[in-house]
Length: 110
Length: 110
DNA sequence: TCCTTTCTTCTATTTTGTATAGATTGGGTC
DNA sequence: GACCCAATCTATACAAAATAGAAGAAAGGA
Image 1 (cartoon, rainbow over the protein chains, first blue to last red):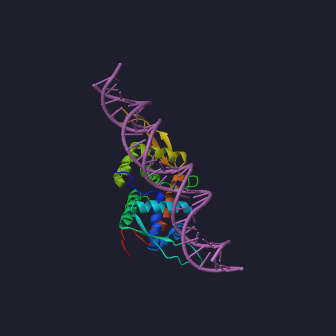
Image 2: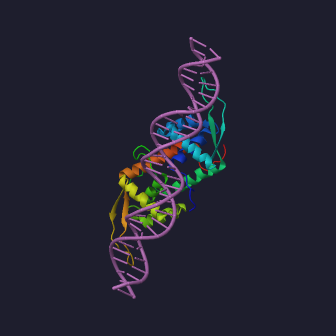
Image 3: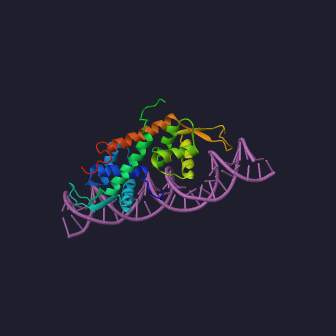
């Protein structure tokens, strides 16, 4: 198996959050989405580092936004998922589904 | 990851394979199960290292098996998932499901 | 004995994940 | 118009997880 082929756990989470917010998500809202959906409070640095890595891999791309918040603030950097990113996500999901098959979550018995 | 809170990507895969093989999986068969189900050819070292880490965390436990293969061979170490392991798996799945919700895989563009 | 088979351990290295601190930007305030 | 403040991103350092493959160990047969 060629190296660097799989999405890390947090990479999947971030990619999914970007997908949900498409195409306007940026650092702060992405982090908020993760927390809102999963209850997981990721650090700011963790989010940006992962976003950056994902962009380097071509799974995400970004462009500067216009700074128009109610008061002050630096221009946000918006992220969009690329077709490659979407494919990687589907692939990761397919893999997990194949392993879960027949063992639905919560089915403690057996 | 604050003190063993989240499962890594490969940790999830290995845990799931152990669950499927419960309670008789061991290194070699676990690796084979992963390959059979996902097509992913994980290295031997990756599997054992992960198994070990998972056991240290209490998500898996192991016991020596009896060596009864058709011909020779060292005794295998069997792995079973613990209730904590099962809980961690359900939690990881719940998190991913929450993020996928409304964006079923393969649904390409809106 | 020693060879073969099956399975596990070990060590080194790269990739991912996390935290903290700080730089940058633009608007408000006086 | 200099200064402060809040929102956002960047840099750096380090910890944990993932990878690769060679080496070691135990059991049975020739």
